[in-house]
Length: 103
Image 1 (cartoon, rainbow, N blue to C red):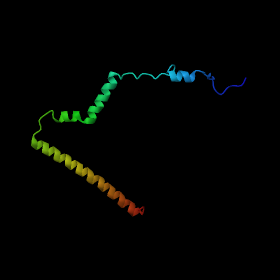
Image 2: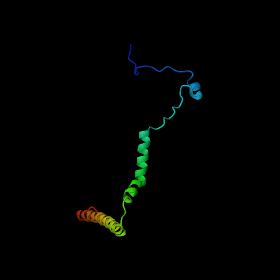
Image 3: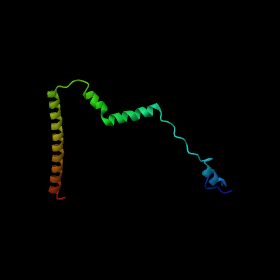
Image 4: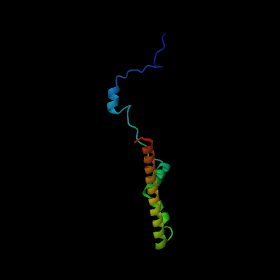
């Protein structure tokens, strides 16, 4: 007895097409409703992406107009310094390449 390639051989079902068309054996599974945990996770992600919590925390206490101006000025300075740093790194990298003769 020779060993077969498959452990078992599928039997041909003569009613395959009929069953498929009728939806007999091959019915679609109904999707189950999401659990509470899944819904909560989705809600938290949406809230985080929208930035709602950030705004609530920012407005939790009164911020004097002078403090607000100072904070915005500091944020702008941080952005500017970050941009200058990145440009400086790009410039230095290109100088290194030109020194080595790669450009």
